[in-house]
Image (cartoon, rainbow, N blue to C red; front, side):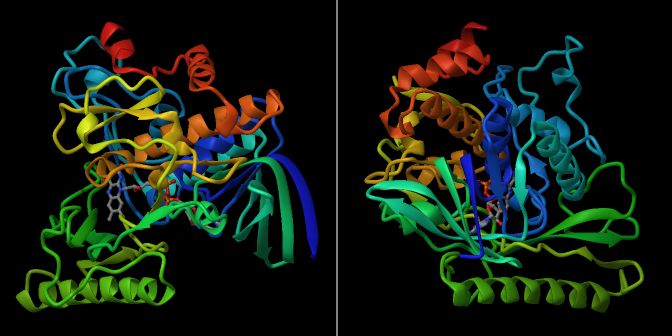
Length: 401
Ligand SMILES: Cc1cc2nc3c(=O)[nH]c(=O)nc-3n(C[C@H](O)[C@H](O)[C@H](O)COP(=O)(O)OP(=O)(O)OC[C@H]3O[C@@H](n4cnc5c(N)ncnc54)[C@H](O)[C@@H]3O)c2cc1C
């Protein structure tokens, strides 16, 4: 090995979930490393150009997600355009029906995340690939990594898998499900006036907007003759990225041929530097967020996920959805927690991903403090620690507020 380091907590993957986990653990005073294979944090929300910070509320005026997920929404606006809706800025306007969400500029979020991580004292390992878990029996005791310095080990009392694809849990032998993904592409473009298909304009910035092509999350507008591809298969990842860029070239050719635009008035500004898979691999955890459990009380719940599609349902997320089976010392956070197919559409988006990241960081700290592993903690103890941070675990907590 070329290098070896020891930490209290190692977080694999620096998307919104990994950043939230690392912030929470470092702020609790733990020596925390965050390992990211790219050179910026934020994952799909920055490198992936996903620029809609979906709602922190239930659609009936109740905020249901608090903590670092809310802090991160505000961070997304620190160095760029976008607005928190007036009703959610504390000016007394009616909130019922007004969603607490915003659009933001991905690069602005990446800048602000650097700052928050530095302020919290997180050790960042950028351009560093997590290759394998270090196993001691069933316990994950760290990760093996590879970067420009060579191969090394980062050992830790607790590891958080926030890779988006449950890479660490899967390679440690935990059961997972793996599904294919419809083809789509989100990119940032320059457009003189109003470009067609610029469906998510960043509002007040003249001439800049998002272009969304291909399938939506239900597979609608999936290009004909294109099969679903897997984000955990290297050949299919390459094909996915190349096919999505083919869509974008076809779009520009069509726009130029129509005569409405030319290459001076409509062109790509930034392409995603991360494959935009919505659906990949997630764990089958010790507990699972169930499709039919909307608005139902879950005794072991550690937080809430509002349905961004319909606006009336909220799920309680059981603590065991962050715990892989048959592995110890490992928590999973973000879009790869254990959820059934339909509700996974709800738990995978930015606010619940950041929330489960924060919970993973908190549970790691609690386990270390008690000299145990996260899977040995009682959910009530995690809930008590969350309550002490002002984070609601149950729907009744927010409806009563
Ligand atoms: C097309 C599309 C549209 C979407 N639209 C929205 C939307 O409008 N609003 C919304 O809220 N959500 C949306 N989402 C979902 C949302 O963006 C993501 O699910 C969420 O950001 C996931 O965060 P995460 O931290 O769990 O994972 P990711 O963002 O995937 O982060 C994982 C991180 O881990 C790193 N990583 C992975 N493997 C390794 C490794 N082996 N070693 C080191 N680092 C590693 C990756 O580089 C990445 O930075 C959309 C997603 C897609 C694909």
